[in-house]
Length: 203
Image (tube, rainbow, N blue to C red; front, side, top):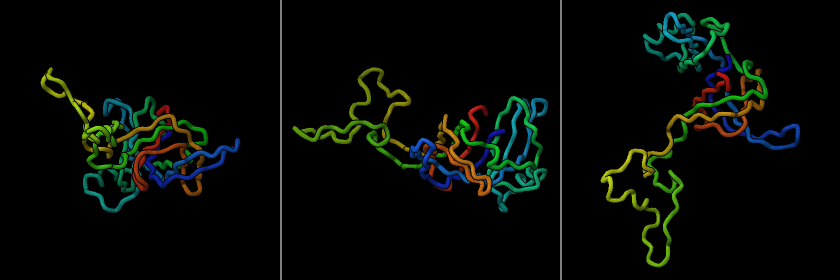
């Protein structure tokens, strides 16, 4: 099962065999633990729950849930599967589950930008700064007389960033099993040290 909870380290560039320089995001793939297996008979669906980042501070209900895995994990995530993989509770997953060239998708929380206007948030154009123009960075008209209301989803100023983002069709560029580091081509959402879910394209 190709899935890992990782932490974003940062970006670097590598030179390919063709001599091309490509941007690569490095992800720290600390060993993950299988904490639970869900089956159709017991839970109504097939899934595997994994835990990442070992922690000592954890509440009693979570400690009881993680007792079969014999380790206290800070983050837990479920991965839906069609067929249960050959894994048992307590098994470890590390960077070796991925190989160079694998197609993957990453899920993280984007950087929070705070309250932003329409130009920054939705790439609106600014108004003219000549001939009496006074509407420089205003959003402009947001509706006409009918239907006397604003439809939900209207592009306006508001909270920007800080939401879950999934980027698909990325490639694994390097796998360092000694240091448990995985390099993924392109950009990955979120700041450095943030939690990133790395999954194979077929998971």
